Image 1 (spheres, helix red, strand yellow):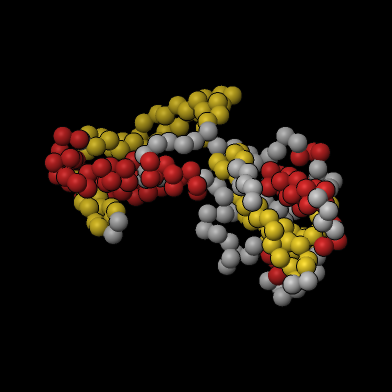
Image 2 (cartoon, rainbow, N blue to C red):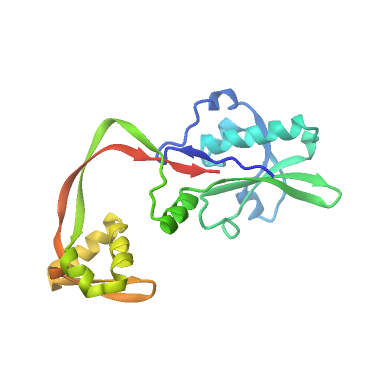
Length: 229
């Protein structure tokens, strides 16, 4: 067994060497064909497949080509190789696109290689367990200036109030996205508190537990990459 983890810009999943393989043709079985109860293979250049969004992005397509090249090089008959796309009801919860390289054997089509855009799932799990940030960061050509809601807790009150739950609750609040913060801010302004649920337990966050809950100007000089496996 072997495994490759390749990291990409989450906003631009292009590959610098994609032009080298764009005309390379693969025999693919897209999810859309399988949903029709059909198994007819589509032979298509990966450049066209990415353009038509049959394959989600350049980087994923590039590695599908490399997998095919490897299988052929070690002696697999290319006429017995296909790439089958996972349908939504079998797609792993962490994947946005996934393809299996399958070989036709005396037992039928059998998966031998899996290629998935895994987003940042693995690193997120590791980070949650270890408390360490495991990200690859890329410096932006120009700083990104945004107005974002910032929630800061009053640790002098927060810790004594929630005791053993304080740390996990603080981490939960720090991880909230802007959309959720907007909703909580509305409740905070209207009623003087908002509620969150962590591990099935509800918590009321009152005004005295916060030092601020306002919009601030955030300047970002770099961004993190995600994992494509």
